[in-house]
Image 1 (tube, rainbow, N blue to C red):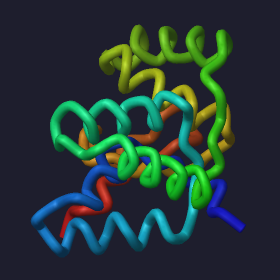
Image 2: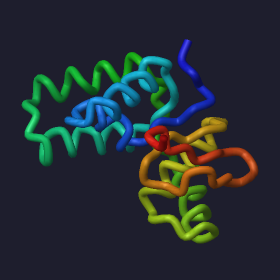
Image 3: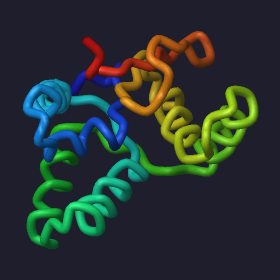
Length: 135
């Protein structure tokens, strides 16, 4: 059963392709325990895999299938959009980061694994931002 109290940001998933073996191993360990993502995360992984990493379509599709098998995938909704806008206004995050945070909050997650956000920050007395690569 996936660890549904943790949300995994796109950047953590992309470390599976890192030359930094410590980060790649840490990302793999997080993903193996499961978690929650949104369709936005799948879209971002597909975009980076194809455009920045040059991964072929069959391999990109296989990667997305693996991620979907290991994680609970929540749809992007109007409620998530509205919550994301509130998060952006209140905390000053970018729109896209705010949508990830909103997805995690609406999924009832207690942790959001991301390298891009302020480690340790608590959002709405529920969601702790965690950089899994800090030593």
